[in-house]
Image (cartoon, rainbow over all chains, first blue to last red; front, side, top):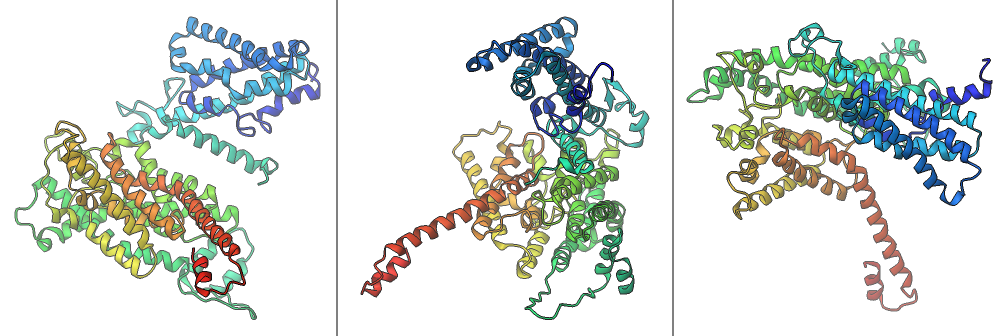
Length: 215
Length: 412
């Protein structure tokens, strides 16, 4: 690691697995449930959050010494809202159909607990470079789970990946459908995301018992 | 066999082996000297077997009914129906063997494989809980359910419904109903409509020989007339999920379970009362003219309140599902509330569910979730009452001469 010290690398890599914002901290669940029925939406959402959190962390970190602590939440909200509006406008300009699918959820990145959580917990107390790495790392950890859930839900629920049929044509009964296979309508509805996330948490914790909480 | 058990003691596969051992033999463990031993014959295995015995008549009936519905749908219903001539025939039974038996085999086979895998991984004994679930599952699905769907659903139901919570006795949801709900949401085209309830209807659909087997509730939800008499509905000569049709056999099974003290009569009685109350409310609403004949709920709302008990899965659900001792309420007062709400909500969902005129499994699952809450408040209520009694008792002057006053204070 020439570019990154070991500690810096930890900032990016920890949130990917052992300190994952979704599976360990259980933050940002709402959007993970709502938009993961399709892989494409999951990927776009992940990229949006990476942008917002990466840039937002740097901005907050640069301003951390001049923000009066009494109004810091408002300042944070203004920063994140500005970034989210940029993302929203870019999506509307270049991927209109997709922005309709994501609907309100791009706007709701503002209220994503992960973002406010990282601002409060990290960016207010660390320098811009570290904050940037931390933001990217956490957003990546969020994105990885989102894409994983989106992959299973789209594959099992619609038989497609990125909208491309991979299991054959369900109407013409080709490919796997010729054997009588049918798409699982359960995977389309949001409760299925809860169960898929639950299974991911289960698998992760049984592979690494250190993560299991005391109760 | 006993020696083999000792030999495998402590090995990885021991739980799997022990499962066969306890299934085939009585245990060779002896009670230790000293201490008091309570010996009861009604262990988990006995309990489960009793429920299965109560289910066997229903299974046999469902096999005959499978064939009866199939041939009646093709050749029209017989003019002068006689049980021996038209119902208990080998042709009917053969359809039952071909269609129902595979469902049973898949349900038990897949479910027990999952149970064994989990027992070996976690190193606990294989529990008997699946014996009943495995028998219930084939009875609550439509007859033409593809076997692979059933297999997927069983894996889901046993893993998510039971094993993640720690296995038999720890589950908050009834595994059989979890399986049914999974099928309902995952493959709705195979779980509702007028084609799935009679064997062959799906294959023949669209062709010149197309047959239809709408359930009574299906007819009602479309405000259509149906040709089944009350005795047909009571004895179960109607289309429906494999084993749910015969309210008569459910009644017998229910009585058997009550007298063998396996199932709670409180839950059954209160669930019946709950469904009757809800049915009466709907009847009243119609009588008052609040719901016109054009309303899409008219058919189901106008259905005589007591007939709700003999169509659909309500009787089956009340007797075999709601009374599950693990997922139901534990306190006596809680059982009354729990059962009442199951009946009440079942009929409510049945009437208002736009996609599928049945709601017993949803109602029972919902109340499964609430059962611990009900118990909590029943227990709290009891504690509060006793605290109050205790407070009143303390106020009592101990040196009071009047015995009568003392007694009065104690019974407050």
